[in-house]
Length: 462
Image 1: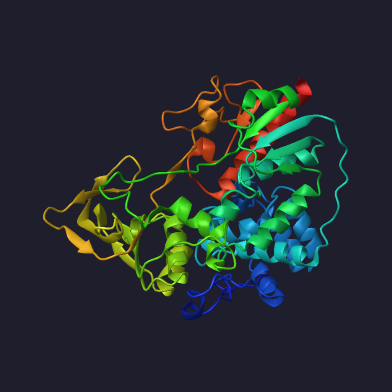
Image 2: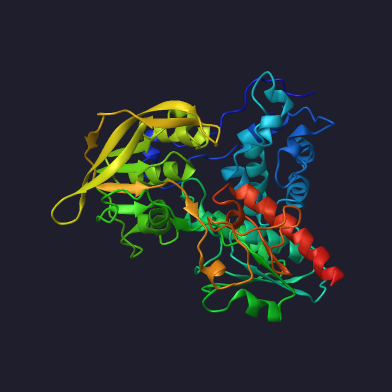
């Protein structure tokens, strides 16, 4: 009999007053008992609407049924047949707008906590390190994957399972992409990312770090040694507002700020020798998940007051509801319907304040959201020592500029065929943020899966 509880079982979490002073994971995960109770809320629908909402098509009712039957290895096998990084996805996927949005239980009450259950199954298996060894027949064909982020890792994993020799060329000193440099430790522990990547390398994937494609090698050179190339280099070029004062000391892009903290472990300074300067008062400009990550990280680094400055209202905040909720619990101050106009510095070139103007909402723009309109004579000053710009990122132009035949959009994204992810160059495919602009981890993974399938067809036909 299904458990007809109308609400999800609450996720155990660190106390907000304690956690905003440490980088330990906020969500502690379900116990076995909680996971079974939550799994029993699933109705095992025959038409499986939740699967339609999953970009990598996980058999959600199948893995939950196995979990209810206490067969966790089977549940893990079902998940990983289509999802290479389940412990990660269980933490950072926006399930509320994907699989859980279509859950039948969510029509009248709360949907099944699919992400929490996926996390429980993956964590249990990774902790026991009893992942089942896969028998793979190698086909002796080679594929190069440029970028070791979610899209690249997924594409590499799927191709390795099909028997290909896959080499990942990663620009940083370790693979993971946004999983290691962008998402904070308190949301996604780095040791867990390493474990997930280790399960992929057991498939025979080779990872070559410190390989900046476009400098050390270019795409044409890779095609000499590899039958196909997948480009999954993400969107790592930060956007700025182009307002006065963005060159003052104490102004960061969210990309630099989070990379210093996460990949370079600035939060462990001086144990790790990468300091990050944080003032008593911090302004984070933007309203997405990255802005929430930056604000919550600044709070943990010792800032007294951290302001989220966003030009629309709370209803338009693009961040996940869970991230907004956690930020509020941790004392982040939301300064909404407000837009910066100037960063003010002192005589030494350090940030001392940010000038803002009040906004009101007008008609909807092309994005479908209400257009923010300036309110005249509403300028005001907020005293801050640090400003973090988190208004989005675009693709790094390096590969575009070193690959003449590669067609791109005016904003820098690579143009691909929507069905195959093939670029304008025969044998070269692309997916993830390098194609769409900054998006979610799971959408990048979905693109990697689609490209792997197309590469398999291409090479077998070739």
